Length: 199
Image (cartoon, rainbow, N blue to C red; front, top):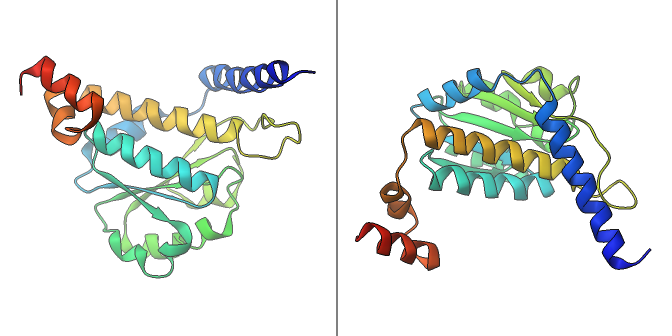
């Protein structure tokens, strides 16, 4: 098998996972999106490892599309960074297995703070899914690497779900190009928007 074949194989695995995600039932996006839209605080993404990298990206996407958000590393969280979170916030805890101890360790304090919690996980019966107020459970499918170990398929599904929710909320807020420019004035995208809006 040559490199092109190997690359295409992995792409197909992730593509098929997204198709299965689209067809999977059981997630109440209406309830979760409505709750986030009504939130008077911020959306807080908590993760570690590859899930942490996805959490950082999602926090940036939500923030730039009208939903104030930030990321907290799970390990740093239990060493003081949980102090960033308030009762009016919503915490999204990301763990593919749903049993990552660094993530689970944040839950007792989050409960005491009083914020709502949402799990992003493939572990339907995991501790994370059980302990959070809400859970978005995506299909548990093979990873795209030849060992079926490296977070690839799972991280892609998490990213797709988060991006899709951010887009839905942005549309619901009637977020405009001018608003996007306010938060993204730099770079080629900022330049393009300035030319289009005349600002």
